[in-house]
Image 1 (cartoon, rainbow, N blue to C red):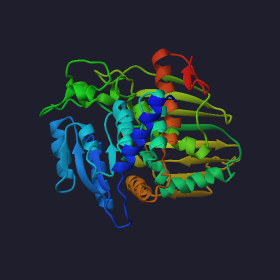
Image 2 (image 1 turned 120 degrees about the horizontal axis):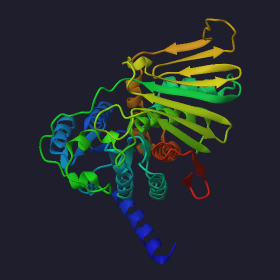
Image 3 (image 1 turned 120 degrees about the vertical axis):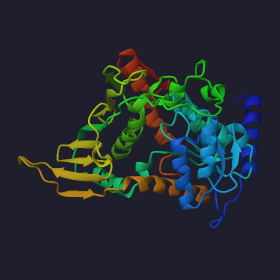
Image 4 (image 1 turned 30 degrees about the vertical axis):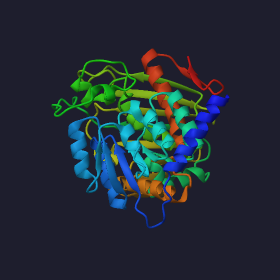
Length: 397
């Protein structure tokens, strides 16, 4: 580090320290939300329910900003530029619930401004961005919780304990899937003003496109489709249960695009090789029939002594058996338990703001999953098996 870099780092640390407010056990934590679309407003309501004061709302779309203010606490301040929100020293923490391509820069800017951050998954849109987020988080000593809420769910913690107990034996294969149905894009009209250039950020410049604005999930410049949105949860859970970090290699295949007007196929399958000597397979199919959320996904940990199945709101342990109808030796079904997991995840984040303890889904966990997701995108787009180089921290064909 040269003298100029050292001075910049010291200045950033002093700024963060100056902005930090000492929060007592009975103090309300003041939170701002950046990105007040559907997910941002949902999180706003959950943060309020737990006791946080939603003191600021930022969105580049006028309609979202107005709706976000209605969802927030009385007197919340409006912002149409997130950097102005970060200048408010009364804000203790921010929620980053924007399209994926903005997660990294907003999180980095927030921790540099002395804010703790709850950032939605996936952590970032590129591997390099994820490492920049880790560096900034650790240098500024801020709390960053990634929105992978299964890590705060009692049901998932309980089933993970089974996976960690040795009851499964050696696990060499993990099968997983997420099935449901999406008929078409969102074509509802965009009302009110939109700061489109700010929304684009560093992505390629183009004229305002209401289809991209409403359906950013399905365009490579901003996300990786449902393949990435759903895998961010499932792959993270697999890593957590299997004590895994970066993969050895990722290979992804996809079907044709069956939703008119989008770029990313809704039916894909990724195969992930791990140094712990197991293979994980994740399939997403959103032209399947519609499922109740209780039945829409599963992770099967195939051990040589038992198999553990983990759904969204249930798990079942099947010992080795030659019976035609296998019966679980242990199972739990808790319909309706998944939504409270988000609240538990937020509660963990707010507790960590006060205690400065590590949150359940730290930035490093988000990055280990982000590496897989970015490799999956590259594999699908190029048709190649991508290998991870831990020395250069890059994916290579």
